Image (cartoon, rainbow, N blue to C red):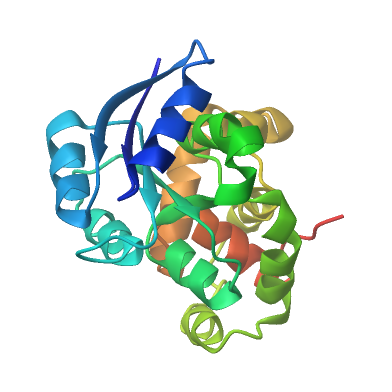
Length: 221
């Protein structure tokens, strides 16, 4: 059972999410909040698998909440952003600050459950209608802050195996798929990924995916 906390300052939106997720048999809402302080408290107390978080909250932004959780080494909760924004700058800020993905509010009815399942399994989720633009931005490096962050890292110290795994991360494969593709154990794959993060200064699979795409290590069809 995937345990979920939802935080949005609009009761109608929360009710809509409850209605959507009530139709699933593998997702359970264990807490709800309406602001950033409650989001941090609920995650600390309940330790959900996934936090579904609105970007615009009355006391602080979803970006600030995601960044706070990212800095907590004891937090294993995946942050899935629920947003009406399609601005690439906002999206990149979300991804850089610890969100594993985002769902556009006007697509939530069709995609929320699958997005939560992906987030819980450690996979990035990019809302379909803007995923192409985000990936294109990553490849071209047009966003200034993303360019600066990527240029501060180097993949020269990666071994051939680590580059191979980074490529597969960029293609969106999870650890099990990578292990099968390379005939490795999942533990070995996880150890390689931890080393890759350390060498490149990355923290999430989403950051690794964007890095791989930007540097041409991975390609999308």
